[in-house]
Amino acid sequence: MSGDDLLSSDAVIVGSPVYFGNMSGEVKTFFDNWNLKFGFQIRDRKMRNKVGGAFATGGSSSNGKEVTMVTILGAMLLNQMIVVSGGGGFGASATTGPDSPGIDEKELTEARDLGKRVAEVAAVVKRGSGQ
Image (cartoon, rainbow, N blue to C red):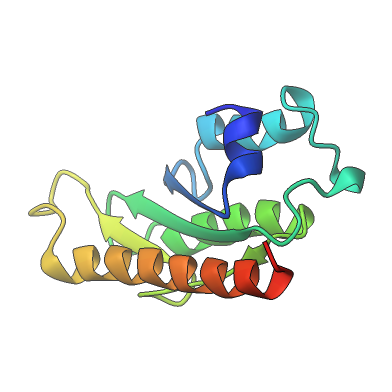
C-alpha cells in the first residue's frame, strides 16, 4: 500500500495478529510509515476525517485482541481519523490458535458487520463533506 492509496481512500480497516498483547511489529511499522515513508506529518492531518476500523486475531479467547484493536484505533485517532466499531465493542476479532477449530460463523459475521459499519460511516462523511 502506498501513501497515494491511503490518501485516495475514504476508509481504512487495519488488522493485526496479537503479539505480546499488542499489534504486530509490521502493523506498527505501517503506522510509522505514515510519517516516515509517506510524509503524513501528524500536524498536517492528511488522514483527518477518514473513517477507520480495526480487527485482531489471537491464539486464544483472552490474549490481548481488544488491547490490540485499541492500539490500532489509537494510532488512527492520533491522525484525527473517525474510528468506528462494528460486530464487537472495538472492532472484529477471531481466535486462530492451534486449539481453535478455525474462524467460525460468529467471527465472520463480526467482520462483515465491521466492514458494513465502516462503509456506512464513510458514505455519511463523504456526503457531508460535499465530495
